[in-house]
Image 1: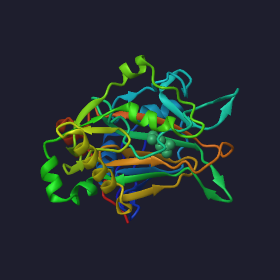
Image 2: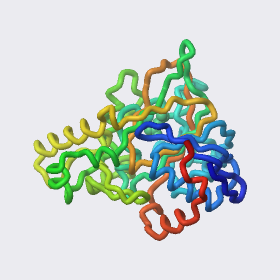
Image 3: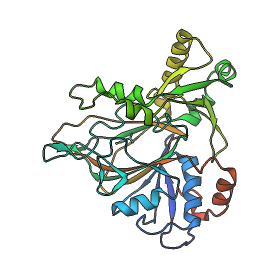
Image 4: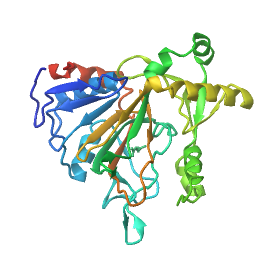
Length: 318
Ligand code: SIN
């Protein structure tokens, strides 16, 4: 275990989960300003492990926002509500009812998807802070599952890799929204024309190069991808189903079970995820969330300089 001190917080070790994704970061207080050394260390760890857990954090919303925006611009909520008062960058995901209304989005992310793949500027990371975690008979509920898109690309059939190498997919925010609307008890109205205008579909290559690791990833998630543009519709549907089934094989999956005080940060380019809806209306869950865009991370100079500043503590401890 190494240790290099920056301003404020200090990473003292990164412990891999031993699974396909996931690591716990020790010795850093995210309420304090993040040094360049620790920023580089976290970027490196994100590329390597995809999902980083920071246990035992005590954060004000402003601190969560300030930490998150070191990684890029934060997307505000679409509905203009369900967020920290006066701070639309810090959204609430929650089934807690106050004054007859849920205080957060009740069904956020409850199927496999990649946040913000529907944007022209795709998502880079989500940062979630666990304020309240549901439990039943001592069992933690409301886990978040992840799948590794770097590993999924590597093991894709060579003929499919060759065939899709120059192909693109359209991603549409409305696909996931409509899927959530079919769930029993959904409160979601159809998107208004204005909301659709603010979230138009976007086109991205099916395979991206990961900006930190340089590895290829399968960037085509079941939540938002609706069409492979260069194939006819029936063939596109068939290939999409193949890609979705491939990347969701259990061997690529990792599950995070929450504890209050966890901050979890995950890389949207190298993973996709699914919030498990296995808790009831009286089993309360509250997460505070920042959705950070990839507006800086695809700049090679930014990544190179950030990684050069990484501290030796970024070296994995076991
Ligand atoms: C999300 O998709 O951002 C929500 C994940 C979660 O609440 O576990």
